[in-house]
Image 1 (spheres, rainbow, N blue to C red):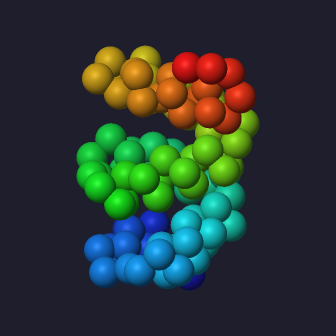
Image 2 (cartoon, helix red, strand yellow):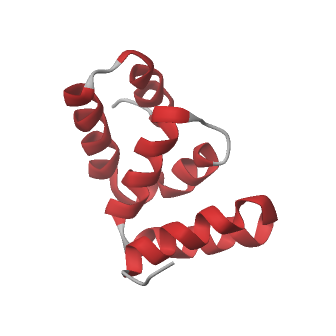
Length: 93
C-alpha cells in the first residue's frame, strides 16, 4: 500500500492525468487517512495543497469533525477549515 507521503511526493512531477489518479488513490483510502491529510494540508503548498484539499472535500462529512478539531488547535488554519467545511456541506462561505 502506498503511503500518503509517497503519493504526495509523486505529485511533484505529475501531469494532470496522474494528479487525478493520485487524488483518487487518496480518496479511495477513506476516512483512515483524513487526520494525516489535515496535518499535511497545514504544511504543503501548491499542487500538493490543492490535491489534499480536494481529497478532503471528496471524502465529505467524514472530514468535518477532523477539520473542526484542527481549526480549534491551529487558529491560522481556521479559515481553511471553515472554507473546506462549507464546500463539503454546500454552504456559501
